[in-house]
Amino acid sequence: VQLKEELRRNGHDAYICDVAPGENIEEVIIHRLAAAKLLIIMGSETYGEQGTTEFSTRQELRFIIQEKKPFFLIKMCDRFQEDFTRFKLTEAISYFPWAKGSPFPPDLIPKLEEKFSTCV
Image (cartoon, rainbow, N blue to C red; front, side):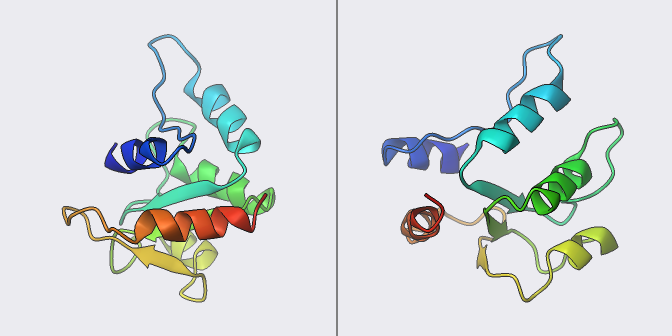
């Protein structure tokens, strides 16, 4: 939520999944993923884990990679728990570290803007 607020404060559109009861979460997220110019992956330890529903961050990551969508990885852990995630998001991929619970990094928005400028 803090990242979304900072992005909006700096004049950028930002979406965090917020689906109303009864809406199809899968359809809403897929539409937003497909339309995005740059995706921000909040890489927690469990990112890429198979969820309890048919749609989870595993399917999200698979879509991002298959569609070759530009993304900015914010790595919020030392190591992803899932082999799948570590395979898809190797250490060779550039990332921005932001430890869970730490203050908002002041250089995050400029780094995101720099990445975004290469996607437009």
